[in-house]
Length: 113
Image (cartoon, rainbow, N blue to C red; front, side):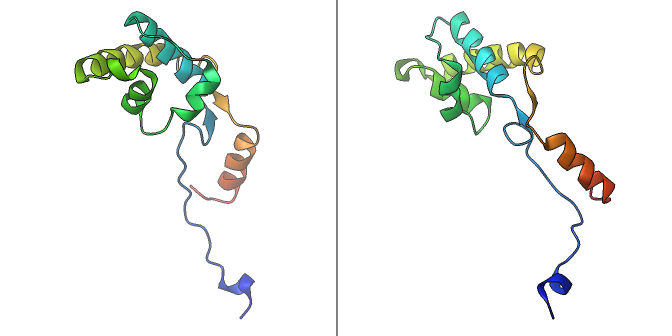
């Protein structure tokens, strides 16, 4: 039996959206920075957020706030602000990574959901 005959057909593909299919870093960073400004905390350059993303908005805000500002109430305030801000701008700059549309088209053409 060869490797070709041992292959099983792909029945489905599951992707994460943020940072996998779509580059959302700038929209996330700008939303976080606006939330930080609103609570009087320092902001960060967009590239710095690459090290802060992963784990959801709450973890992002916890990482972005200065250590002395990470009490539960301050984090929750900034999280709620960021959710509202990001909800209004999540697609201002976010775009699929190069080749993603073609990849999804090829999967669709092969009948892979």
